[in-house]
Length: 147
Image (cartoon, rainbow, N blue to C red; front, top):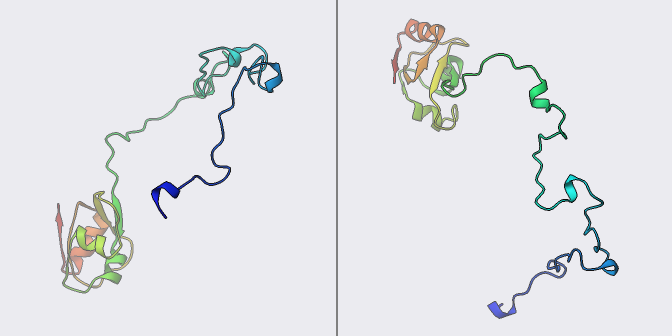
């Protein structure tokens, strides 16, 4: 195949619809816009939330509460039972190790939670620890380090 032999697939290229080209063209007179009204005018643009002058839904619904999404810290969580399953006793567990074993994904900070039992001792290095996770890690003789 050469460059000069390339051609578009049959039926993929269509000529543009020529609007307003006389009554016999099928798209003459009003050019497919119907009769009068805001949508028939030139330069019309109506936002999706516009409801014809009626009070928009976004303003009719009561506003309540507060969302601190801009400053909230979103942690990826790992429970101690997952550490128990995936790591051997005496290992030093870092965020990179958690990522390699598939326990966390992405670059969010990691928080260790205390769900499950822990029998092995680890040195765990993470961004945050719950109180129960910290007590379980230290009860088995392990250490925790906050990044």
